[in-house]
Length: 216
Length: 246
Image 1 (cartoon, rainbow over the protein chains, first blue to last red):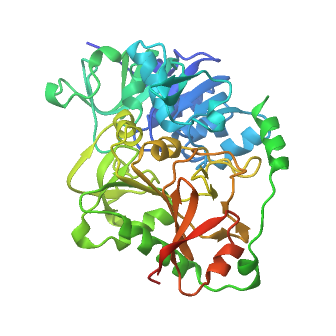
Image 2 (image 1 turned 90 degrees about the vertical axis):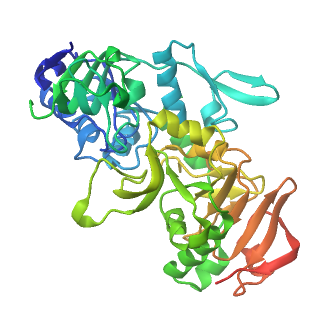
Image 3 (image 1 turned 45 degrees about the vertical axis):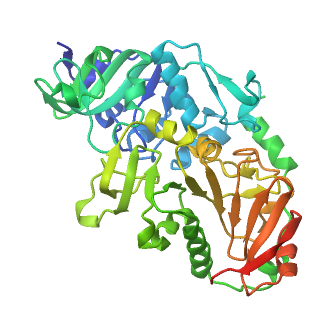
C-alpha cells in the first residue's frame, strides 16, 4: 500500500535547489495541483525538466512566472513568452533538447543505461560538444541519462498500490518520468481501491506518494 | 559560451536576402496562398499512409485529402488516429493534438506515451511529414526552430520527426515578409541536415535531388524567371515541368 498524502505533505519534501521533473504535454496530463502547491510554497532555485513550459497562467508555466526555476531543460518554450524573456535577459538558464532525445535521456536513466545514441541533431548545433559515434556507416550523437530528485506526475486513475492508468493523451512524459526520479509523486484524478491489472500503465513500484485531486 | 551570448553572436552573423516580387506587388491573398500549398501537399499521400502534420499551415493539409485516400494522422503527444477539432461544447483537455487543440479521434485510434510516439517518429514508422520552415536549402537541410536573439520557440519534436519520417515535405510560403527562404545554404541554425525530399510553395514545387533542387511544377501565374528571382538556391528545371493546380 502506498502513502496517500495531501499535496502539502508531498510538496513539503521538495527543498530549494532540487531537480524536479514535471509531466504533461502543455496542460494535458500535467499535475496541476502539485504545481499549485509548489507555487504556494515558493520553493526556489529549482532545476526543472519538462516537455514545455505551457502558458504563463497554467501549471508548469506558473513556476516560470513565479521565478522559482533557475535552470530549465525542455524541448519547447514557444507557448510561454515569459520563458523566452527570462532566457534572453539572462535570468533563466535554458537547455533546449529535441523532444525525442529528452525522452530517451530520461528513459535511459530509468532503465539503467549509460546513455543513448541518436541520429537526431546530427549536423546541427545539438551535436556541439558531444561525443559522436559511427555505427555501420551512420553517425549518431551520444546523449547522457537524465534523472531528477523528484518527479511530479499525473494519473487519471490510481489505486492504493500505486498503479496508474490514463485517459486520452494524458500519458505523454508521465510514464518515463516515473522511472527516473528518486521520489515519485503522482496526482490522481481518482483514487480507486484496486485497478484492473490489464489497464495499468505505470506499475505501482515506481510510485512513492499518491495525492488525490479532491483532497488538496 | 553562455547561451544568451551565443545567440547574440549568431544574430550578428545573419543577413537576409529580400524578395523583389513580394516587395513590389501583392499577387495572391494569404488565404489563397495557404489553399494552393495545402491542396498540393495533400496530393502526396497514398491510401493508408501514416502522416504527421506540423503546426500552422501544414495542419490545413488535412482539409484537402481526398476521401478515398484515408490517411491516418499521428500526433507526437500520443495519438494515432487524430480526427476533427472537438466542438466547443464538449471540449475535453484530456484529448489534444500537439498544437494543444482538443480533437476527436477516428475509429481504430489509439493512445500511447511520448516514448512510443517518438519510436514511431524517429524509428522510421511515419510515412510522411509536412512541416513549415524558416529556410530550406539546396542540399535539403532546413531551419525552423530558432532565429537567434529574436524568436526561440525551441525544436519540440521536429528534429526527431524530420530525421525519422520516410518522406519530408516542406510546405511554406515561397518568401516571408519579403525575405527569401529557399537558399543555397541555410544560415540559421539547422533543424536537420539533408533530410528534406520535397518543397511546396504557392509558386512552385521543388524536388530535392542528390545534385540539388529540381523544379517539377510551377504555378501558371509565374514564369521560371520569376521563380529564379525569389529563390537564392540554384535549381534545374525538369524536362516534364507541369503546372500546379491553383
